[in-house]
Length: 224
Image (cartoon, rainbow, N blue to C red; front, side):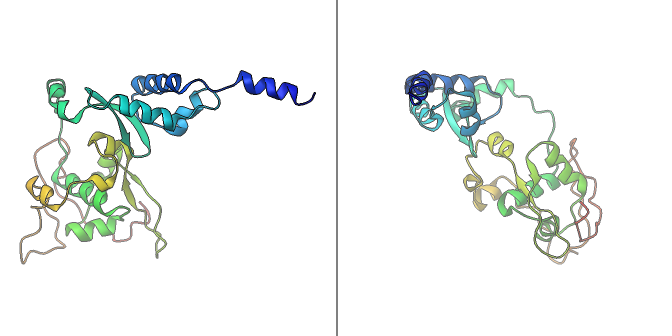
């Protein structure tokens, strides 16, 4: 008799059909401004639901449609189909641009993560101001990673899920190659032959995020 209540309880909390779970996932992704992980969806769904299976069903249902179920890092979101992005261009207002210093720094972090500030400076050939990194952190495109187990325990930087979502990437492995970067002008700012690699370079571009000239900073970034 002691097992009877438990059996009745199991029947009361039986998971809804997969079709209903799919509808639940669709509703959550449609209403959420940010991508949702499977764990976040499962926490909101009835006991016994399988959001992973429901997401895959929903993803197949949206194939070829104007919006798609897209993976963003470890999360999922409903996004406009890539080939229809031009339809939204009129609603997108360009209000500010990243400075060349910020673009270079962001690219280095994306391709070399986790990377320390000293390593960024070594790759760029110039010192990196804290303001440049702060801008990327404020945009929520870069965050602090784990400290290196080396003298000084320097912090590292990695790109965020928001960065992947903004550029329509599933993971950092989907970043463009060197050829695409050169065509975009992101690899044209190397110091000229014979230039002093330690001298600060003027990265001014005249936009809101411009760094007039990045100042020399101590090589040990443990205090940052």
